[in-house]
Image (cartoon, rainbow, N blue to C red; front, side, top):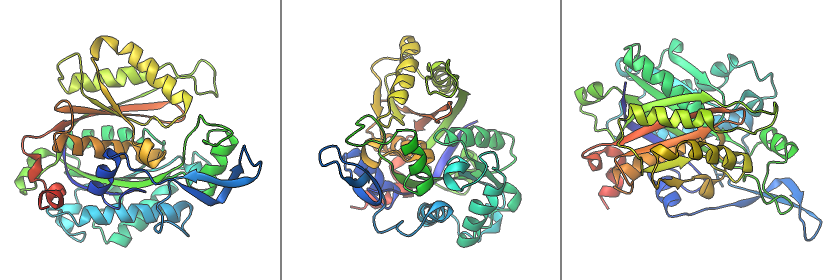
Length: 375
């Protein structure tokens, strides 16, 4: 089953809209800042200084934990709902057949709670978001995926199955995360994963909110919506480590996800298109990606790799969604090498996924690009 993207929204540290964010990331714009509330040791002066991160300056200050999630989620959802062709939030005929899927960080990064207690997250995140937007999505069609980076692939794999079964007509995915609140920062510091002068190999924390509206293509055409791209495959898997508790993943499951996505996309091999990967400066992610590439050598040519973390830092469970944003706009504007691009992601505990995105014949007509076209 395939689906088309007919709505998109994003808020990032380099742009308060999907188009602006993608343009800034493509131009390699970055706005790192010192965090006054989280300090690390400076190697030269031996004094404590603010950790470098990628906050949304003037946007998320004063919000923390679930409140920060809501702030980012509202920002990207409001842009999506303002897209020409997307019905009003109170249009019950449209939204009553839409699943609202929230892609969240692992619960321990969102609330000081048991990591297995996922069920309450629907009431803590999606229900308030729906009510704030006056969105006419039924309560029984709200679903949370809280597995970190690979959450978008898990949500899309399930969502595409629901669309194929006609259980719903469309899928509204909201992927939001912030590594700039006390819980994840403390955890990352304890695990020695933050990039500092004392530890140059590590991640820079970031935050972002990204959302998509996906529909069956026939349904989108019926209501005369102009899609941006087609999502043609989503595959997930689980890496295992030879050393339990350590992130020494061989890349076997990730390579299989890429192979499965390429097969479902009916891509001519060897594939020489674009990969959007959530590499963030950590060595374990580089080893995982390298292990997958070694196993994929027979089916890959000179593929091109893009990393959004270079501009906005590690945005956790929103990173794959930003990769999907970049893949979509690259295909729409002709920046992509081929007609299909792949988005690859891996969670801290070994969940991995890959999705294949296909360009359309006349994407420039999409209202998602209308601002750029009118310039």
